[in-house]
Image (cartoon, rainbow, N blue to C red; front, side):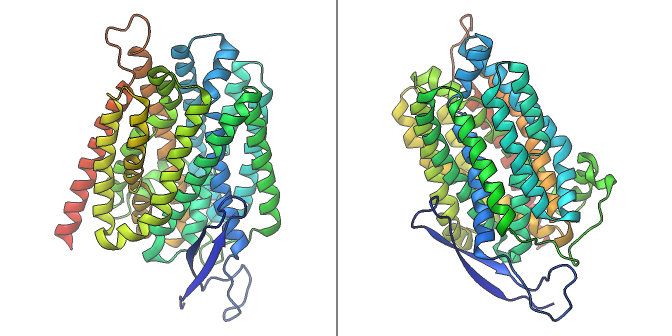
Length: 445
């Protein structure tokens, strides 16, 4: 089958104002049942825009609720900030447990039945989850909502599988970077809107997130084509649909195991941000939800610049392995710095540096995607979602517990930055794994 390059200009109206990115797709796949030699089809610009908007909304939902989550938990439980952080960790972990159990199943489901139905169903359930959180008067209903949301949390992984379907092999890391940029745009808009909407109460951001997710599901229903074809369609296998079976299969791909370990450790360290950022900045700098939202929006701007633009400059010059290693080194330095900063302005100095460390994630995903066959891209993204889920089970519990241990009234040592020091150690362990894998790759070349 002949593959040739096709350039599609993508603009996200209202979200990427005045900003268009080039997305290179591969041609040669045909819709199910189409005759060999018939005209080929690639997703149109509206379909690619939908994928990017889905990622934007996914991260907007996170950013919308992060500034108000501490206040909502304290409202429901009547507790202080330290106890609220612990409850926040439990809620995040419950979501992640469900994502771990069902992520590979949904990934395999999308390899069999297609990306479209999985994406659309996930968006609808996500909107229901946000509505439950907006209406709840009990922490246990909030807990139930997080469980339901975790079962169908397939939007990000399936969006990545969609991008893998239409990307050329040598441009997967850069196109995954574009997904990272879309995530960053959501992180700009989400916290800003979350901070503003918090003035109308702790429930208002949840209603907004619900409306966004449902509106995008309707948009996708009308414009999203399917990318899974007869050539790449794979029968659903329950042996590979469970998390351990899928992980074993992907881990057997040559060179994938150390990358998966490095990805896991990097994810555990990275999730210190959603786990304790709101609590850390309130405790350390006495920030209100509006300032928390501003700081998260600044992170989003930095992510967009790095993953939407800088990655396309850095990758050709440094190569994938050096980019991953350099990014993880920077992340270690940033986490260690957050452990000891005492002035709020230093956070805004460190944010641009921390965004450079985020180059590691799309490049690791690109390396893994290139090593995986076309009929298992959904499975790979399901496995990565499961690994991420394990990280989000472990990380919020570890980081919120570390925060509580070093901030409660009877703490032997007052150190709000303790979770970031722990994250720095975990990131360094992941760095050692990746460096070892890179050396083996060099020796084999």
